[in-house]
Structures are given as C-alpha cells and as structure tokens.
Length: 162
Image 1 (spheres, rainbow, N blue to C red):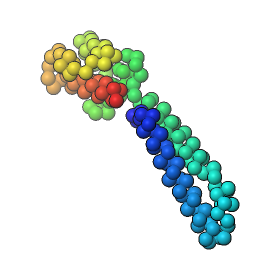
Image 2 (cartoon, rainbow, N blue to C red; image 1 turned 90 degrees about the horizontal axis):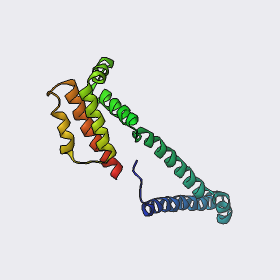
Image 3 (spheres, rainbow, N blue to C red; image 1 turned 30 degrees about the vertical axis):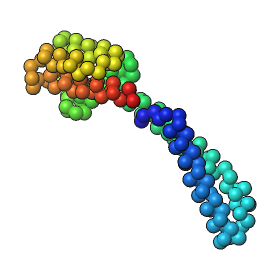
C-alpha cells in the first residue's frame, strides 16, 4: 500500500464524508416521506453516522497499512534474506535441501551479502547487480536464485522510492 499525499488523502476522506452525508440526508428524506418523521428529527438521530463511518474507514486503512508494511522486509540484513528466501521458495519451489546447498556455498553467500549492501544503498543500476550472475554457471540453482534476488531487490528499491 503506497502512502498517498496529504492533499490526496484529504480529497479522498472529504469525498467519502460528502457521500455518506448525502446518504444520511437521503435516509432522512425517506423517513419524512414514508414514516412521516420530521426531517430535522431524523438528522438529529443520524448526525454521527458520517463521522463514525469515516473513523471506521480510517482505522481499517491504518490497520491494513500496518499489516502490509509487515510484508515488506525490514532494513536489517536478516529481514532482507528472509524476504528473498520466502520469494525464492514460492517462485522457484525450493526445498530445504536447496537452501542447505545455498547456505554452504560461500560465493552465493557473498553475492547475497553484496546484493543487500546495494539494496541498503538504494542502488538502482541493474548492471551493478548483473555482475553477480557472472559468478555462477547458467541454469544452476545458485544462478537462478541470484537472478531472482536481483529482480526482487530492484523491485523493492523501486517500491520504496514511490
């Protein structure tokens, strides 16, 4: 979930408030016509609805925003590696034995550490990351995971920049 500008948030919530206010006015008019309840009496009973709905909407979006931030890796190297591992497990269908092979490969560990350093520095140059691919033979487990790591790292940097 991307953080919207203050002006855009104001317009969004103000628009929501106006829509809910129009619905409440419509309900008051409906009550006046069908139940013969005076308009002002209906409005006095329903005045809090726009505020309540706006408050609930804001709370829901705040909670949703907090949960979506948990899906993003934290800035530590451990969080970065966990995120990359999760993505690699999902997209490449890696097994525990694959992870053990990667853990024991010192060159792969160095490539992963260097990718993290570039991620931390917010380096967007894909050519700087492509150097890691030259360290491994094509169509190997390490090459495929490093290739995925590069794509995911660049995606994360671009997403954070927005």
